[in-house]
Image (cartoon, rainbow, N blue to C red; front, side, top):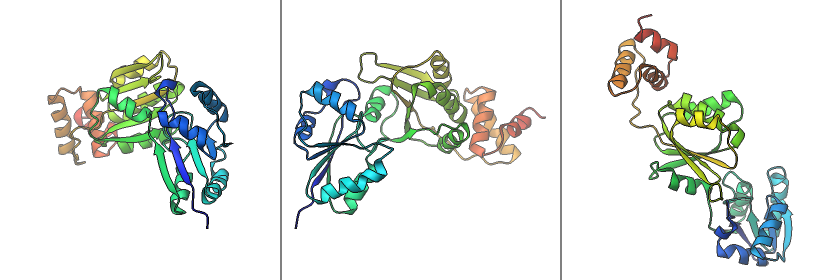
Length: 279
């Protein structure tokens, strides 16, 4: 009986090819099958590394992931070593790979990894925000309503949050975050990490929205600090007024205090506004 092969998830550079882990070249040269998110980018990577791929090269991307997974699993069960690489970073982290890993684990195939570059961890490290506890939220929904609901559900999240975003949607995403989390919530926009034009812009969300309005290019990772001391606020009139007054006493503007209290209490902003202003 043939022993199962090995599935290797290999991290690839998020910027400079010199950041490629040394083991990556060995795995590329010796794998029986190399499954790549983009075979053209794989070719550029191997040329830069000076590596010749001896095994079969197949495409494995979002569009064919479901259909290609059984084929790759068959190769693994036949005893082959399958190397999975994506365009940048670690496979399966907002990239193809999860389906194959799950199938391999269920079939009893060994799954291992070549550790290396990660935009998530790199952005966290350079953000200047708390990193003792964090969560990764990937890409936000493109539709405004779905995006708002996702962020509203994260408004009380106390861990630092990491998001991926397309450059042309960064301003919209930051504006939606400011609405859900508050204009003053600290954040960092990390652009072109590890590349020649790397830039990390830090500040409150409102300030970052204004900055992003000028236009952004390149790969973007957004890091947002978690909610601090986000207590439950009762929905009765006295509690709502007291909560607004407490935030104002702590230095918040009345507008921001009303928005925050409405969010914490789960009531419309207009209701809190009317109570505070005696409408």
